Image (cartoon, rainbow, N blue to C red; front, side, top):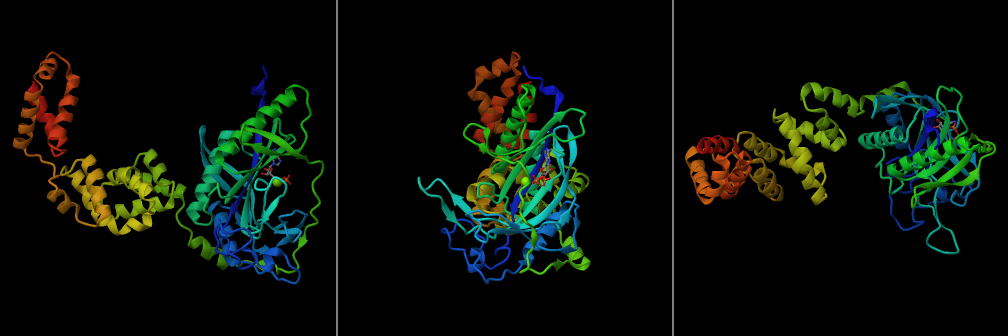
Length: 480
Ligand code: ADP
Ligand code: MG
């Protein structure tokens, strides 16, 4: 048995997020995913001699947004540098990146770890262009190259080595994905490669200060794989250490078929990328006014909303977490609560039927804003006991979404309005009890659980129109 308890894992993550700009970082080629290979490739993307790059201002704005959301310092004086290396999918022979002046310095991302809240410290966020894609699995003999992605703007979000478990890494990446989506700067789609992660991992004895030798697992393309890769590496490194093996600095890759990692290369020394400022791109200065304007236009962030909502709406934490997962949903909740004070009911409606409806139809919240007045009326009909929730959220909701119409009219026409009239309910109770004399006997002998059966039968008989509260009262009285 290995003594794993005496070690501490140290993890630092580098997340590449593809910025959701319409065009590339230094030219007008489209960035859209899924186009035919090598169709978004102007001479600038292809790195032809004599072409001149021009910086996309939107990409800079997006990077600043992320920095401000994380509380980073924004560098006012910036330049782009050439990072020189040869790679088939890098047509220029260098990648344009930032070197000594990352646009965002420091900052943090707050996560809800299993052991409580934690701040994951950021080292920096910098801007760089993406490379193209080498495709190894189409031809058995050739590597194919698609340069559509080359030159797409990325931000690289780099943490300090301050994460200590695969679980926290998982939660952190989830939080970053939520944040970039919230800000609208990246679609966060890991399957399409919009978000990719490199995990740096080392181990050390608990209490030790110095960092151990790290390995880097490259290009993890799902949050699950990030967790699996880190779990596997921690165990592998501890095993090596405990059995007297040497830990060498390595770059590794994840094998998703069996949740293991394998070495792609040993990293003896730091590569010499011969960085120098790109002479084709002028350094850029960001004024304080420009940065302040972006800050002022930033949406309320999920953590701030959560604090507010506890006070304004008094919702349970679970509901708040759910509703603050996606900005579109949080905005829709706010829109609903402009028209009703049934805050909890509004939350239930979103988390339940509204979400299910949007999932089924593939519609976005944007498309259902016009239905808010009808949704509010429907919700209040339930609150006032005129409709039972399952009828309202099923039949009536579907109908008013399919064709905008008053839920009151629809429910009346289809005879769905719930009755609190004692006479009518008593009639249904009478009928049900007459149909089940044996059950009534059992109930009277003490099998009180049968009340559920009677309620169910009455609900069926009345087609959901018997108000449950009145029904329970009357039924209990009748049976006693
Ligand atoms: P590199 O030059 O190899 O890319 P950096 O110093 O830029 O290394 O760090 C890259 C990432 O690796 C950062 O997220 C950093 O926190 C993390 N890191 C650095 N050293 C270690 C270590 N010994 N163990 C775990 N993570 C580390
Ligand atoms: Mg690295």
